[in-house]
Structure formats: C-alpha cells, structure tokens
Image (cartoon, rainbow, N blue to C red):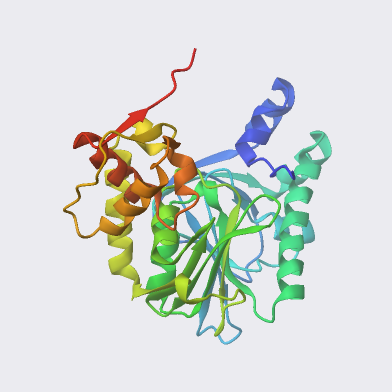
Length: 338
C-alpha cells in the first residue's frame, strides 16, 4: 500500500540533530495569529509558512476579484508559500486563518539556503508538490469540474467537513478515499440537504451515522461541485434530510457511542440467546432487534460479524445488543487476552 507523505514535523523529527538545528536556526516562530488573511493571491512570496497549530483555508479569487472559492484546508504539519519561493512567481492563492493559528516562517533567503545545505529537504518539498500536481492532474483527467476543497482525513473532524459543505449551499459530491485513492465513502449534497450516501457496506442515513462514529478515518477527502453524482445511488442510499439537523443528530450519537464501554464499541464479543422468545417494547429499533435475534438463533455470533450483514451503524447495533443483555434475554462474552 502506498505510504502517505509525512507532515513537516514528522520529517523534522527524522533528521539528525545537526540538520534539524540548522533548519530551526533559520526558522522564525510567528506565534499566535488571529483569524485573518495571512498571505494574498498575486503578491510576491516572502517565505514558506508551516502550521504549528490551527486550521487555515486556501482561497482562490476570480480574476475580477468578486468571487472566492475555498480550494483546501490545511492543519498542523502542513505548509504553504513554497511554490512562489521555488518558482519566483507571485502567490497563486490566498491563505486565510479559520481560527487562531500558530505559524513558523522560513524566509525566502533562508529557505533557499537550507535547500542546498540540508540533504533531503529539497526532495521533501518536491515530493509534496508532485503529490499535489498528481491529484490535480487526476481530477482534471477524470472530471470536467475541479475540486472545491479537500484535505487529509486524520487532520479534520468529520463534523467540520460536513458542516462546511452543508452551509455552503452548493450541490456536489463528497468522496472519502483511502491511501491508495480508492473510494470507501461518498455523500451527495443538494444545497443544505444531504440526499444520498454510502460508507463501507452501509447505505443511506446509517452510512452517515457510521462516518461520525469512526475515530480514525484514513486517507483523504475531496468535495466537487457538480449537478449530478459520479457514483450511482439506488433507493437504499437515500438520506434526504436537512444537513444541519442531521449533523446535530450525528454528533449526539457519537457522544453517546463514545460513552459506551469499549467491549460494546468494538463489537468484538459473542452475542447469544439466553431466553427462547424475544421481548421488545422499543418501536424505533424493533425491526433491528428481530434481525439480531434471528442471527443468534442457533449459536452465539461475534457482533462485528453480525454488523457486516446489516445496514445499521455500530451505535444502533451496540445499543440493541446491550439492551438484550441488560434485560436478561442475551449474553455477551468477550474473549480475554492472555
């Protein structure tokens, strides 16, 4: 599997002490920067900036200066400004701080000096530039529209991604990609409405709930404005609800899920019947309880295996199974690690 490129601080940690001190000696800690435009499109580059804390957005301005478009979000370990320093051209985009950020700056003369003095530094920045060019070329070759914004999933709260798209009012498709650029999740937005979705083996609203329950999504995400989705969605994929309302529900489910004991969150135990008949009074999850009850009719089943045969998020399944155990209708046995 393709290994993702390290962020700036990981690269720095892997250098020997002499080269690391050489870079740090020519870097300036700008400290706290309030939300504002940090660098502007078309201005002359004065250095490379590294994000130590916070989030910034990369913004492209139309030639007439009337319209802005967010191209990407950058977080800790990301950098910007290197293209104009290396090419001598003016800035190709503006950078705006979304929140209070902490920045490190390497002025142009120092950066060019370090490129010559520190082995591997030039290759590191070149590799990142090549990766950006590859992604841009790939999108251009496969789509007639451009990526409105994207980023690395480990650096972002999924809630921020969905909120940004829903509040933009744009129709478009959000894709989640693993490190090999394979799509493992996709959601289509029609203005503020999240109309369709898929994630892993799940469809519809359960797919959306599951995305928010995942604590360490790998890979990257991209959102493209488009009038039609690139992936075919059948009726099972329909969500069709107001984006902000759904996001509030998703955040609430995530909080409740995180409060569950670990043995329920990872679904690693075996669920088995303890009584002959099912007693269930909760109408909301009655159908799911019947499905689970049927799966464990003959012998106990690993709950994670049951989940993979159902179109239901792990929170709903864990909640139903836990209720069955608490009411004495089922047992849940977790293998002890020896």
